[in-house]
Amino acid sequence: MTTPTAGSSARDVPDGTDLAALEEFAVDCAAAAGAFIEEARPAELRVATKSSETDPVTQMDSAAERLLRERIAAARPDDACHGEEEEATRGTTGLTWVIDPIDGTVNYVYGYPFYSVSVAVVTGDVTTPGAWRPVAGAVAHPRAGLVYHARRGGGAFARDASGRDEPVRVSGAVDLPTSLIATGFGYDADKRRAQGKALVPVLPRVRDIRRGGSAALDLCHVASGLLDGYYEMGINAWDMAAGWLILTEAGGLLTGLDGRPPSPDLIVGAGQPLHQALHDLVAEALAAFDWSADAPGR
Ligand code: LIP
Image 1 (cartoon, protein in one colour):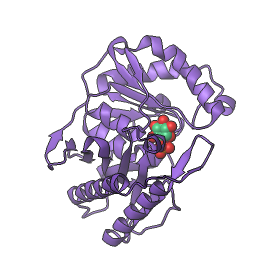
Image 2 (cartoon, protein in one colour):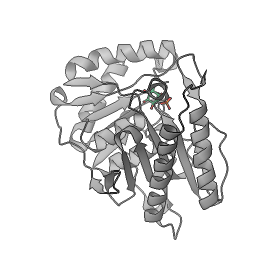
Image 3 (cartoon, helix red, strand yellow):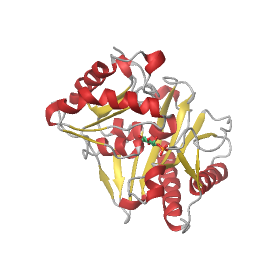
Image 4 (tube, helix red, strand yellow):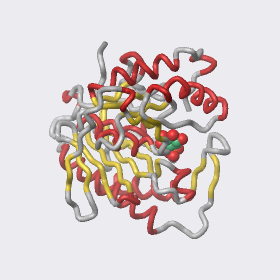
């Protein structure tokens, strides 16, 4: 089973690319947008809806994406950009910035402190699962004063407000019954019903389940050992691009189903010893679904 990982092929990085500089730029962008969504939050958020009435977007999502796009365009004008709230832009360098200005928007609306800003730069075609790889990225957790970051081959770190970097590493968990697993649910009622059904066989087989509400942070928390594993259906490239690399550089693995790349169908992330067992448990739980009619994606 060929398992795609974020670091699987250095050949796709354009010659002369300074990954360390891209990583630091991603940290700066994520930190700046993280500070913005905290400091510029108005007394009254205007909450509109997107794919369903439970899928919110606020003026802060749009403003934070605008801030990120302007910073990227100023510093890297020839790179492409792909974000959650605006149309994608084309580039000529082979590098694409993949951004989620607020991952965990529901939490942000409520003031529940589990939301993040995700900024990654990838090679390949980010619209096709398996055809792209993150090469540098950062996830800012403003309420924790942390920015998780990584570059391909450079390890994974959590940077605190003083600028100190702490290396992060996945847990050594190997057994499901003693593993803490996170998951999440989409916005469509029928998909949520299916995702809830898929949780039933999983819950009794693991230590416990956590549902944080930000895929990017769930991936960073697996990378840093705060969780042992994470799976979810319906995750977009912008939710997972930076967290995928941070998890891989922390010694973890992120895949889709049966060796396929991570995609909106499914992502499963854990340290290497646990990953196969978690994947097989989730695959077993999903086996009951007719993916055409019942696909429990977003
Ligand atoms: C969120 C994801 C999370 C999922 C939430 C939501 P958003 O992204 O990061 O994993 O469970 O339902 O989709 O919509 O807040 O950017």
